[in-house]
Length: 462
Image (cartoon, rainbow, N blue to C red; front, top):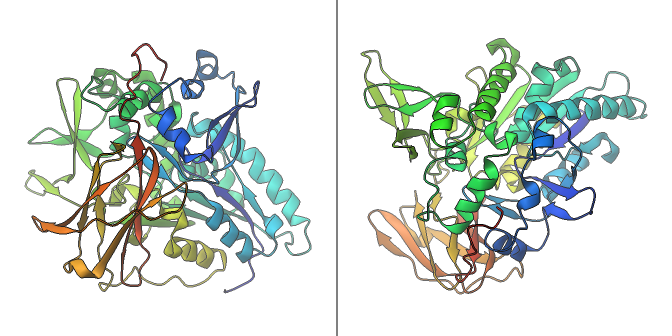
């Protein structure tokens, strides 16, 4: 560790990374430790109904739902896939700090807008910094360090850039923050909502349309592929997909404000996940958004080039940092970034004023995982592994999140240049796919096994 870490530190989770509780009843709406709850919630009953943003909340009359703490157990949602807990990251930050009381966890109501949550962060940040400066290990020159995963980085950036928090900021460390948005958000908010989608996906579509926080993830770069040209997504496009054009327009305006000027990124330390298959552009056709796994760029001759830049499976590489910042990149999926050894070491290095090393060298294996986000229990999960030339060099296991037990391993086969594994998920619940090669951290992904008989009436709430 370098110089003493005498700053006040705040850790912000990503989208769906805070536990939410209904104030009137005390009922936990999101973030239960029971992995089986997610299998039931996305397929039966009305467990998710309380997460929808009401007309009162949309009008600013909030308080019905309270964010209580950061995730302490894995969570899962369709399209967005799995969310790992923040326990290891927070523990490492507290150990690196001058005193554990220098570190504040900031859970927030991720259903609501980045702007609203940035206002809440401003109140908490100034109070936390004021208290910490009275500590004997701090001193009056202590400043703020914000450590943020995913959407938490947008909340932090809005606080520093728009609400004036930059004056107290020493560093903003982001893990997979979608500064320019994610094409996945379009899939969340509109398009084909018919029975061709799985039941969890249909439920998410109905829920997501009411959430300003999910609209804040919409891509704001040139991502709409029109064949001979490429353009930005518009609020009208979202309305044409059956989404809420007003919420989309508000979200685009917030993004414009928080991005600020190129010269205002000196305190940013972005970390990004790479090498995973990631949607980077889309084609709009007949009210449906078709995601494409290539980035569209116009060359000097005015022709559209299409190049696969990949990313962390949710945020494509160049969307995770502004051009004015140099990212630290390593091989990992979006939801697993906060639990990975490399990410935690990066955060602690920034906290300790250490000289950060270069990106991982070419010796690092570009291991990539591709699989469905959910399958019916009792059926096979098809796992594709890319980037590993020698099948004997990679170890792929599937672990039951509830019990910690490793499932009997299926034999991998080579098919079309990829390693394919067909693994039966024997019961409903949450499973973690772990792919390990060499000394680098394993690439992991959470998958949900659903009740194959669950198909409730369409009149049920999402």
